[in-house]
Image (cartoon, rainbow, N blue to C red):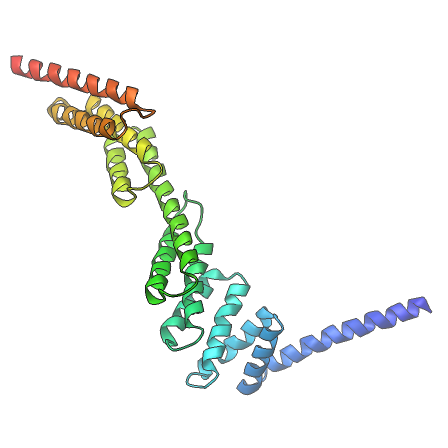
Length: 273
């Protein structure tokens, strides 16, 4: 008896699942856009986002100008977000914000477009296209909605993303330094200071600039040594003016002294010759 009851219960469950699937398939293959759209909304409300998205896909090109088009487009973008399809979600949210400029959903769509790019921002060692895109879109959001309660969150996320770009720039400069490409290291670190003057790595960056300048001088042809030793002295002097008691100050003093000595000896040698 118990086995029979279990079999009946299992059969009932399978029948219900089959019926639900049949209903979705029936709607999906129908040629009734009204039915498809209505069911898409229903599946969305039940948080069945994959089914909702599939049905929205079928009618999005046929509902332009309709009263419920705005809601459909917004829900459609949201299905991508909830399904973690962030590239497409960012695209559809941005498109929605630019199309439905009077919509009550516009502010949230503009924010989510930026946030989807934030979610795709990778570790600083990888390509940072999504990071830069997220920063740009958060800044646009701040300009468009200066009174939004999301502004503090946007600023916090922008700072986080900018820090990632700083780390990327520092890693690139450090890589040049480790590869003994000292001129490229100086250029890379100079760019970092220009773009991120408040970086927490700024003391080490200036130290590596001075050291790279010195090593570049040491490895240069005679014709370029004098100018490069002078540049090293200037870099070291600049560092010591900012960090007279810093953790690298002793080494920087030694580098400056060595650069001055080498420069003086070089001038003397060239004068004699």
